[in-house]
Image (cartoon, rainbow, N blue to C red; front, top):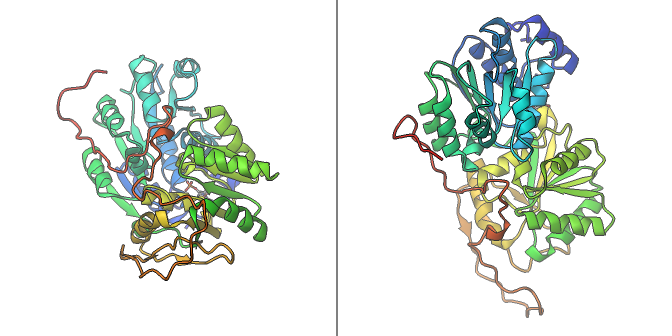
Length: 444
Ligand code: AMP
């Protein structure tokens, strides 16, 4: 199968040739003809499967072939993304695919001044990529009208709900014309997302290119059990032993990111960090430098877990396990992309056993454990498996405790409440699903 046999027009084929795309990926093979035929779509596709081109290529074709010229302060297609980074990245891909087409594209998101965005929207844009909060701001300030909208794409819809955007999505839904095409993409498909899809989509075609909630099998994954207080030391040890070149590291909190970056920089290691407390420009610069291999170790919170496409990233390290098990799939999806192989190593301490168990249950696998000599934990990580059971073996007779070991940890406290910055919504483990089309409109 080729892109030409899927019915794509010549300017798109030319762009794909320049980009070196030869064969459509499975999600592209299914999505492209369906979107061209005008169908609504509900696609469960893992990160790195080529889903962006799966929706962007047919969307660009439809906008070129059909519909009126874009009006002032309007958009003909809207792509909603959960984070600023993803919005930038999706926009960059769309602009590349559109390079030979007479269409305009633009991305808007929070954390930067709204005025240039309002100016840019004056002439209207064919494709607008947006994060939900900024889109609503622009709409409320009359900088954007949505009555010309032909297509809505929800990218990483599950993430939008995880980030607490359910109310924003309900508001946006009310701003849209009833007659439109809607494409919903999500790496994982929870029951909440299926409910949302039921409300937003019209007779959608379901596409599932990989088994539900299973991590890409191109990623070799394992766990290194370790005591919490020795994680940083173990990280440096593994890094030197494995001669790691480029690593994306995930830490649970913003403080955790800063502490690890400080430690690594203190050792003369080329490291940088990104999290929601840092200004957008600083985050983007760190990411660009990492992509250009000018930074060796990038430490991030889950803000960076989704959508970031870094070519040939060989290794992801979970310095801490994610609070939401689905984020594990997104984190490790940063490696093993587009058919390459990758490795994902998780440094797991006893406090994290419930998170480990949740991940194994979700991904239906028991992660293998590799004990690192000299780093065997004092606090044993209980056995876990894909059934969700945590097996606490009877304790061995204890060695006398060394002083200053830090004492017991609070097993239930996974999030530092003081660590949630105002710029980013906090991750809510319990999701609220909006009910659309009911009740009076809320005024803010
Ligand atoms: P995505 O899942 O959309 O983030 O895409 C993952 C990566 O695969 C990106 O670097 C794309 O440029 C690349 N890609 C997408 N489709 C193809 C294709 N058909 N052939 C080769 N690379 C692709």
